[in-house]
Length: 256
Image 1 (cartoon, one colour):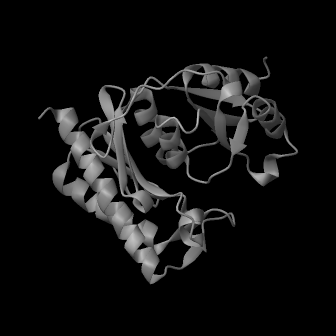
Image 2 (cartoon, helix red, strand yellow):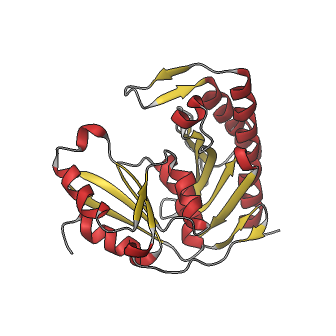
């Protein structure tokens, strides 16, 4: 087994274990606390799932660095870093919606190497990277069909306090392009919908690495694209099929 294949296998195992642990804890009932904004919450399941992943990584990849959404941080010596989102879509998770997942990415200073995402509600695990084939429960995913933004559904989000700002103006330019819109609440799950052809593009602002990198790795392995755009005083992350990404990025930046 190649090193990358072994890392992909490990990543898939980690997100399955983390997702299954969080799902069991949700059945038993979990409390939530705010991380600053009412919509930005954390639960005991987030912390427990991150601890599970960190413990295995420290045993199995002791030279690698770690960056976790809930505070895990280790500086490695290998030049590689595992980026962990133990529960992506915590608002959905806590309020009983199933659009949430556990996600992880492996990165270097130059690029993301791979990502893995587990969706407990359907027992589905996705894995892949720019240099590795993308799979769903071990079966290959098809390369994405390129389409313009007018022919796809877009996933998006704009913080409520940004609507009356220049960021809101940029967002309104972009949302005029797709055939329809969804605001679903989990960046990694939105990316998996792109990977399977359900959605065509996603765009959000000020996306942290744990929300961006796992999905980006898998979408790019299927021929998709990612662009970063500075517009309206914020940084936009645009992910999806190449033509739709280019069109949305141009609209955000003020072009046509």
